[in-house]
Image 1 (tube, helix red, strand yellow):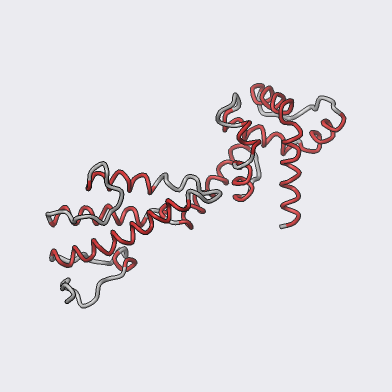
Image 2 (cartoon, helix red, strand yellow):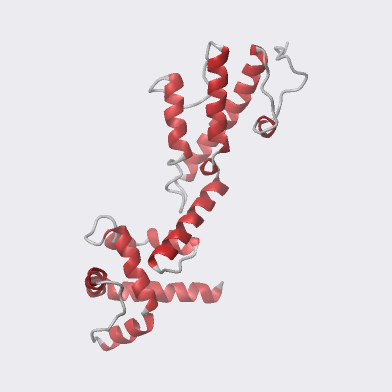
Length: 224
């Protein structure tokens, strides 16, 4: 026989997350809400763990997932990995844990669509800051490429300067292509001496790859 929850029908997750939803006042009702949210949240954690293996979603275990991990361990101990464990003993504790689960479920970065939105915001920020014109897909492809691995975080350039170099290359692509074809030094318009030196060094080491990358962007846009 099904255990009574104090409600004729258990509320759906989206109803519980509504700002107009009032939590039950009795323990049975609160536990029913807790179990519903905990199961939904655990399913979402599993999906995030899968997304991290997909191209462009390597950061899926940051943001909402990372906070959820901390909150789960605060409630269940350092070995706990999921929300749906024994409910807190007190009514106050039960309500507090429900709020922690709601925080996770309401976080933009707890869903694939939200992660895509964050990726797009990141692309917009990079383009605005460094004068590049990446699409989200182009940035994902670039950051999965050997050129990114060779030029960015573990090298003398660093990720920020790599984007500045790419921005300079994009703005001067005609001069670059002509200059590399002629094997002559190219006069680039760059923002400061440091970036100029890094750009020239990058061209010396990765010139052909940079040109292929810029050409590839242009071809992808033409086919789109």
